[in-house]
Length: 397
Image (cartoon, rainbow, N blue to C red; front, side, top):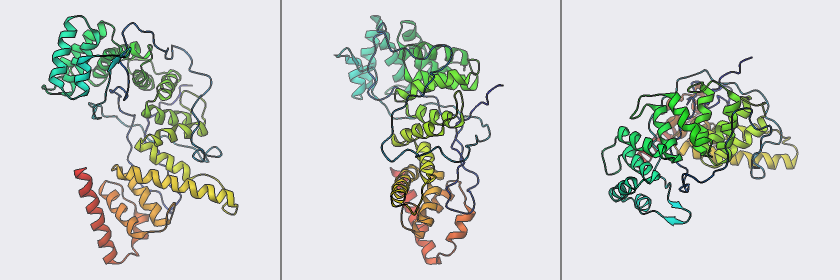
């Protein structure tokens, strides 16, 4: 039987704090292509052997994840069944993450071009990289590609970037192969071609490139450039998650929870989602907050009661973080917490403030609106002013 194709989105899990669930929850579809090298990634010589990533065939037989901090993981498998949201189309686009250092060192030796890049001296970096490229330095082509892809002190040109990455990849640079694969996956500077994207991702993934493993997992999940194969997708997703790709940690948690490419394991899934939440992944923050609110326990037992209070406070902190990042679903869930006193004291003014902000972001909540109807006109005006002030501040941050 063919396994169902997953679409990673925010699960429509309702906090059990109101009579009705919130309709119209935002769904993000599959996670975006990862184009960036993780902060602190070192420059890798083209011929240096790297840890082997997953090969063709079955994934790892056991899930080996790092333990979460005490008191943050569910004491038992989560009740109920997570349901996948309807399939949706994912919009691909260029990466918008801030600049990160990459390829900065080789065996402890400095590289003038990359040092200039890290210091923001992009024209200097470009000139030094061009000289190094003429001398046959593979990674110099990668730097040239990065500068043109991002339009750093030069006109942005994905076409020039693709040409530079292609030369770097031909000379054996893994980062160039990975970056070229990302351009083919999105049709930036080249014609969109998932077969070529898969070829370049696989070239880097099989030499231990974590983000290439993540993107290769997406191709196996969607059957683009590779035959659809959830088990191989799981293996590559696991590798990426274990090597620090935060989005992979969240998606791996989803795969474990629903049983995509592996046996369902809600407990292990929750641990990986929690790991991504602690790293600041906004959807993971919301999802893990829901998990913490769903913990079982006997309120009459003092130990259980203390554990549940701690879990609720932690969940509230995750929702505050997600709401502060502008996520409307997180804002709605935070409003419900304040309205019902979960993880905090009841505060209808604060609940109304976040409700107005979430509503402006497209998440309506008739049940919460009805609950807040008891506020006086004066208090509603105060909450609206607070919401407007928050939005104004968020625009300048």
